[in-house]
Amino acid sequence: MKNVIVWDGLKGEEMAEVYSMIESTNYKSPAAQPKAKRSKGTVRKFNDPKRYGFVEVDGTKDRLFFHISESVDPGLSWLSYGERISFDIEEDAKGRSQAVKITLIGGRN
Image (cartoon, rainbow, N blue to C red):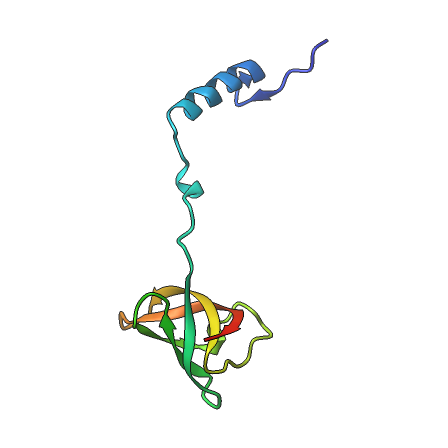
């Protein structure tokens, strides 16, 4: 006897047909949307005792606030002027842009 996979009442051949129809329409699940590109920048100030600083975003002269607690690397506890970081940009509670999910990418400018 042939092993037949049934999924929600459809056999394997029927599922293959459904998948081929979905594929031909270029349907993409909302969950499969591409992630936003991470921003990169250079640390321009870091206040070690208070654990915050400012990063200059590549390609602009914009400077964003960041707090080291927003680092995704638990070992990252301080940054120096000129270090390169990557980050996401989000709004804080007051609607101001800030750098979050910070990772050190090395190098100095």
